[in-house]
Image (cartoon, rainbow, N blue to C red; front, side):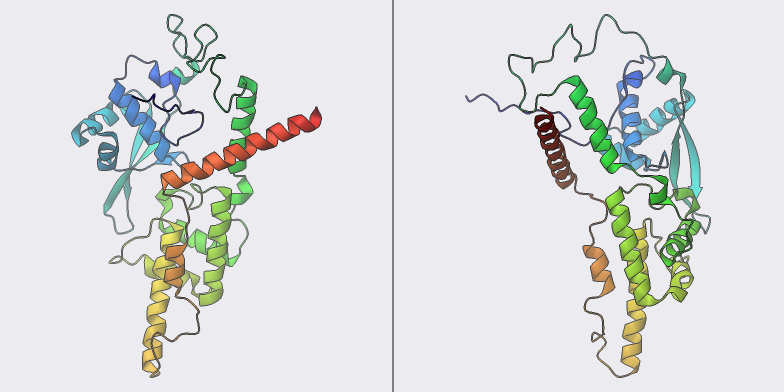
Length: 305
């Protein structure tokens, strides 16, 4: 039998992260730690998460009833706070979770009998006799992590809605209709924010600035499905306008499909990637970015030498 091929897990996958100050607490069962880690992954840049209990149950393999019990335990210990949310018509929607500052994080338990795997007294399996392909020192790893994080970090200006531009008016009108959801752009990286703003501007150039408030009100009518993202809001609004155009063309005895637009806006928005939901593709792209950063760091080191 052939020997299984090895992998280097360094920054290889995207997934849930359970901090050590949670992992080391005997007060929490393993299942509660898993739920906490998965909740953290749902959190956006506004620091809140709102997955349903059924979603948490499906993704962790824990029964829904047990998930509710574990959430109660996390809240009782002061790790999270739950807030009920409601739509504009008063109907209940998924619960919002806030993460609370806890004394455990500032005073982690000492664990001298079992030092971490990457300590000097217990070298990892990939020791110096068999170094991984992308072998780097601890300092290099820290620099690399900071470089990766900074490439995806957002400044206040990326999320600012202070300027009274048509694009910002659309975003603020959407935010006003969904105040409990946080900032509409908070869960996007800098590239996705730029793409989103561009699509909004193109859409407003098409329909006209004077229709922004009217269309936002129309997509949030009580009997309509409520958009949860800016992309969905644009899609719903575009379908409203396209329906109006077809009705107008039919009234004027024209071919309803013969418009002066090269492609229907709803089709353009549906083809727009937006946030990367495909984790496999996202992981592949992240790996490419990391390799590029490593190559640049090596090139800089050689130039300095």
